[in-house]
Picture 1 (cartoon, one colour):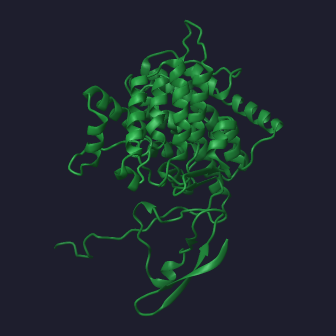
Picture 2: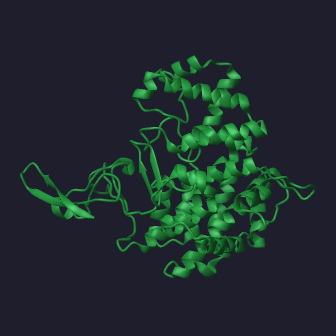
Picture 3: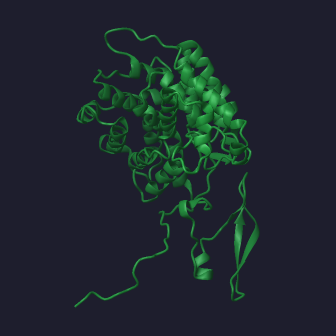
Amino acid sequence: MTNRTFTLTDQDGKSSEFDVLEGTHGPGCIAISDLYAKTGCFTYDPGFGATGSCKSAISFINGEEGILLHRGYPIDQLAEKSSYLEICYLLLNGELPTKPEFAEFDNTIKQHTMVHENIRDFINGFRYDAHPMAMLVGTVGALSSFYHDSIDISNPEHREISAHRLIAKLPTIASYCYKHHRGLPFMYPDNSLGYVENFMQMMFAVPAQDYVQSPTAARALEVMMILHADHEQNASTSTVRLAGSSGANPFASIAAGIASLWGPAHGGANEAVINMLDSIYNSGETIETTIARAKDKNDPFRLMGFGHRVYKNFDPRAKIIAGLCHDLLDELGGDQPMFDLALELEQATLADDYFRERRLYPNVDFYSGIILRALNIPMNMFTVMFAMARTVGWISHWLEMHHDPEFRIGRPRQIYTGHAKRDYPS
């Protein structure tokens, strides 16, 4: 991976040479692990926006061109041709499965969809009005106490079975968090159904009557989950890796990722979009007024769902998900005025030089909340849905980290700005 070097010269004329590592795609990275030994200095990079923390073969983002690849496959092709469970196999194993491999994987996941009966009691122990994300963080963290037979991180078989358990059990646990919050009876998994259909059955069915599946709704949710399955080294994925670097078991590491995702700047963005659209719609404010407020530096109003930390072009996931909105709302009715408002707002921003010059294009969060609302999923479950989809990405990175020969515990540096050394007063 090294084919060139970078030379750093300080003010005294002393030069230090560093290798430049080249990946399959993307810019080179200057290897600075020996920076302190050569220069006596560390780097300062708030938010790690210019720091490569690991080598990874799972996902790649080109923010300038609006490209997202999973194991080399473009996200638009995967969303069109693949299934969520096939994406799970791809992220975990590096290649798409053959038909026999997929059949075996599908069967393995189905064997683990049930959760220990005491987990139902555990969830019922939360307050009736507990936030579903609070329940999810606690329950996933507690899985290590239920499945402690497979948390030896040095054992490859334990790592694999834990990965399968997490992918299989997250839909069950997510549905239980929803049911507890709504005061509804829990539904057991039905392994005669597909992965997404099984989740929808557990979420929305009740014992008193039959639940009729909507293929359009199931496909919309499946594509949503594909689009959220992984997204390189974001805050929650980096959290999973950092927690896992200490030797923490996979359930604890994934719980840490869920906690990170809970932050409104990360997993809560789609909820913020819905709140914004609700506010605009209910106030009767025009699109023109909304755009003017967004451009006014003295107005605290922010246009949610536009722009991205990485994408400086159109978010490729947003293009896919916008098409889903049409199909879903046409069949289910949905919140058509909300979607019309969203489309009008999108067109207005794309036609405005202010947003084009700043590359503030709609991102995936702009549309995902509308789809989740059309599926009758309440806003306090939005981030739970995100976590359920992203679990495979998190555990794939956790597994990859444990195969990395350069793997070591994470330990960022700091610039100390406190008091200089001083004596305790006598």
